[in-house]
Length: 490
Image 1 (cartoon, one colour):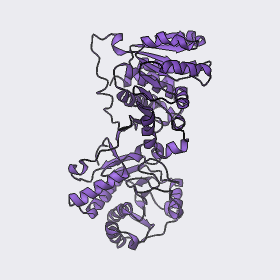
Image 2 (cartoon, rainbow, N blue to C red):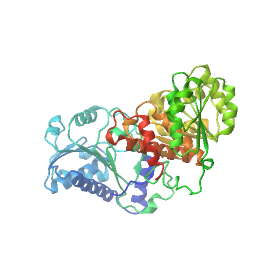
Image 3 (cartoon, rainbow, N blue to C red):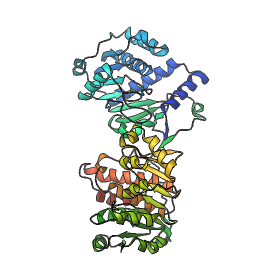
Image 4 (cartoon, rainbow, N blue to C red):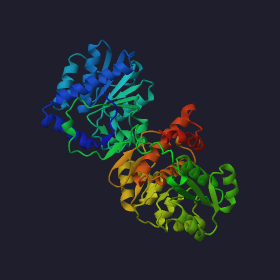
């Protein structure tokens, strides 16, 4: 098992990698299956050394074949193995059938019942593989629900059964695993959407296929790895001055929503912007200056007054606390009527959905609800395929789209980055405002929109992870702001 690579593939691409290994490089399919099962078995022994009783659930495809390999290794090691096939071995094809027949000569199959779960220390899920494209039903769905209701830890082979390996959507019901060993190529659906509640720890093994297997297959997405910030945020010159790091203007904060612009502005400053200004309702000015005197705060009652402030800034961040009243609409129109790069969030996105425009110099940061409005659809459609949704937003509106949520996606309409950091504590008010400020701050420092978006998402997530050391519940956007400085100085 090796460190997780950055390249993420669709299930179809991984099947092509399998085909190349078998047909172009003369590695028999049975050998790959044996390697996968053996690798998973070694990982089980490493992570669960005290497990003496295994329950192995095998489906009818190659994923089930991997499970039969694991069952055989466990039995040979002296463990008590309960093997529950969900398809007759005679119905299996090729390598999976031969592997099943080998295991079944040593282990008697047992029909699955909930009692099986009461007599095991660990469940091995080898029911469904990467080809799942419709909701799970029948006995498999019942078994998955029973496993999830059990306290036994689960190792899911290649992909948790019931999880769509391309989209990250749960197809009716899915296994909640503690560990998912996956093979040949990382499947993109393991890292976004509902996958976070299913996969547990993902561990990768390339099964020793030649590097040439991957030639010419362009991964549609990539995982943002641990070094994502290092190259983008180098040490500053000792002769640096504030003018070298850009000027961010945060625009928003209708009546009663001044906190949103304060969070976004401070996030921009904490991310390293040289200067940060705020244009907001005049009533918010004293409180904002009192709370954070480093900000330059301007009362904005007439949208036309934005022109001079806009001309002095390098980057505009518009939307936090903007509201959906007439003031918000007029301010948004004034903000986008210019040549400065923009980061658009919150009600800025809602106004954009009502009056669509395309430009190449902005970053749009919707959550699924805002994304649905931008694409004139519903949240369910967005969540069915987050990869397609984020690319569609970038295609339709230009620039860079950031689709927030577990496994945030960043796309310029071509490639797609996936952030696998962050935690559930970020599900609280103000977190999106902080992300807007971080991205704007990095954009002001000279990063491209795509780089500012991807690195901003990573910095925001890492700061949240640092801030959550004492617990996720109760995490506030202000806690993330406090942690940002340590993150943007890698």
